[in-house]
Image (cartoon, rainbow, N blue to C red; front, top):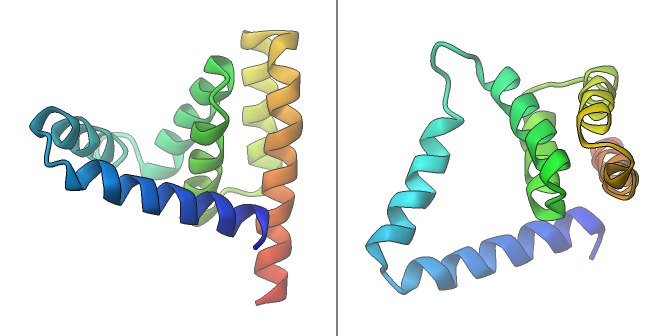
Length: 117
């Protein structure tokens, strides 16, 4: 299983377990998150760039992978993603660099997966 499949499989499996607990607060929070990234006055592509930058500054690797996947689906180019990386690194400082490395690796894996299809 590759890096992307492993992340997506784990995320899906655990989300199913979490949602099966039928907790109203958790369900509403997940719904709020989903709706926050839907198209509105700000387009999805821009919202994903914001989410990616924030996730990097907050140093949440799972969040970074999720937003990289959504950014890829939204059609961001490698150049756009690396501009987001640069802003996040500037804002977050050198502590973001390990997350930057993993983010670059994940983006590269998504590009490679797309070529393999």
